[in-house]
Length: 427
Image (cartoon, rainbow, N blue to C red; front, side, top):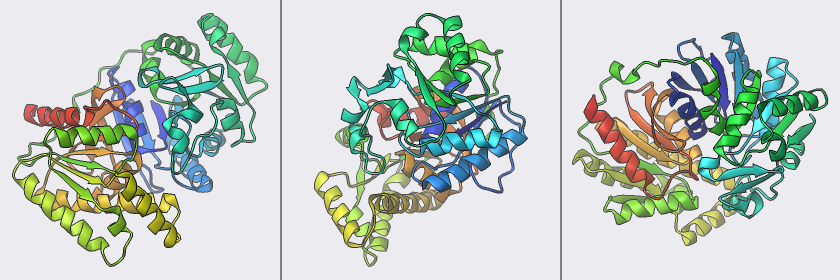
């Protein structure tokens, strides 16, 4: 069994997809301290939803989640991080090593199919250095440098080093010897990759290492060097037929999600906008959520697909930040308040209509919506686009798509809606 700890919901599904694409059965569960795990999948992923937590809390969650996996006797452990190192990376990697009593881990952050590449330790996003990409302006974890060794070394007392692309391209045996050489002196080694073929070399070289970390991309390559699997069709267990429309909830402000919601609106999807300024006003919050819910409910019951989204106009976002500052709320608290309002609206809609098809855009929004709905995790189903799968919810009989804010082509949300309709019609 492979045990994975992921720091957000969409990332958990992202790496789960990599294994399910190789016919491994994959289960994603939401972390809580009293959780009872079973060895009922080839790959078990625990979503700690810790990317936006304090460093201390994220350490605690990952440590305890790793211990839970260790009790099951996993043969390999993976710490799934953001593909641009946002979050409490050092604390979370340290937590896994501490829990396992290990002193070494291999890290690969590259995700070539989604434009993330690492060359000589410098990480780029669609050709731009990380510090010049959109992630430089992330409201919670702004990425102001591109050297991955430096980023991680600032967050851990353990020693960090790099194996560059020249060594990778000398082949599996050379790379493996290089890893063994640094293993005696360092605790973390970051390995360059620019292409999927580079990742394949890395995967073969580390196929039997006990602790791996980083983005999900190498998960597509690792199973090629392991015994073949034959996963079951989990959809045979449930009835997810639904006469309602599909609900799309968007809380992300990334350029990718902005383009995706604009595409839906231009394509004629009804869009109901949550005014974030009202969410922060105690005397207007309930009226705002009730208004959004009422309008969406009527349309969903008519069988129409509906987009419920946080207002992403720049002037509204700026005004919301000013209101938050006036209320002494930091950007993270403001973001979580908006996610909570969207989750409340989604929960009311699901409970009132019984809808069974849901798409959520944004990692924090996805986690918040799932918790509000009592979704305890999901089985990973089918790939819609690179790194973006559908899932069967655990805790509710629902088909879901949980999308990272920065992932997906402009048409993705429309493709996700069509995909869920096709899945439900086949059952």
